[in-house]
Image 1: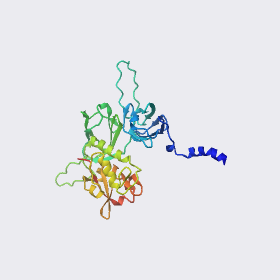
Image 2: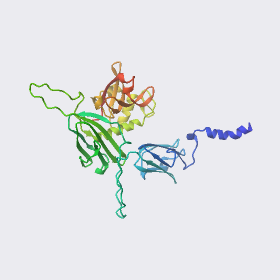
Image 3: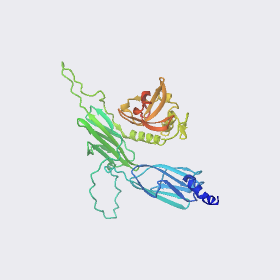
Image 4: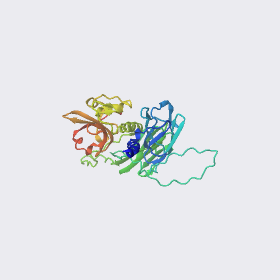
Length: 381
């Protein structure tokens, strides 16, 4: 019995969760990253650490590459959480708690080598160093889902404002594997009409600003229109039924939609709560209203009223941020948000009663696919 009492404190210490162990004033516990130096291939990074309970917010200074950023702090538990977009290369985080300073380094190294970050301006006081020719590169790492389109026009239009872009060196446009500068960039906006060859064309458009690289990819099938037949001749329709005019790609709207869907995905794993409209618990329409409201898009509270907003779009034309509605007994009963859409896929995020907030391809769901009613665009003007 005496020996058991001697080892009891040790047993208690080993069985106490790490979160419950107290920290001294000024101490810091790294949870993610768990080392002072770490390397990642993911640009979006969740930071989680812990300091002494009861520390006041005014006693904390937290910077990323010497710049303050948004983070969540719970003084009751000492928990600090943040989601941040890493810059290419080294990212130095400095946390000051009163007089004590802690630093850790996260290096973002995507395997993508095709799209190089713009080089820093040279110091004219130093002698220029000889530069080596860049190696051949690819876009393998930053591959988003490919958008597939069919058009009868001989060009593919791109236009819109580019947030955070001030130089052509921050833009990459690739047409069928070859880089092209055949576009107009002025006052932070781009306009291009990319010539298409008959058949399949592969187009890649990428930018890089302070928040990192962003890439869009398309596979555009160009089927020229046949000339009208002479009188007495029958017209042979060889174009597929889904051939349509390709609308200009508005990159400014694309960036806005991406912000909305990225924000929505932060709530993956949040529990379902009937009538819930906050991160403590969402129902389906509560999640949509909460996410859209944070981006100044006002929606009614319930799904049947949300289904009257915006305009209907076909699945092949649906974009990230569009809302998908489902029926039960002939009326709207559920809503989700599009993350990616094609003819065969419809990847959405939604709050379900059984699993809370999840991401899934509803075209692969025997439960949701038969209930699909329609898709509405509530974002475009």
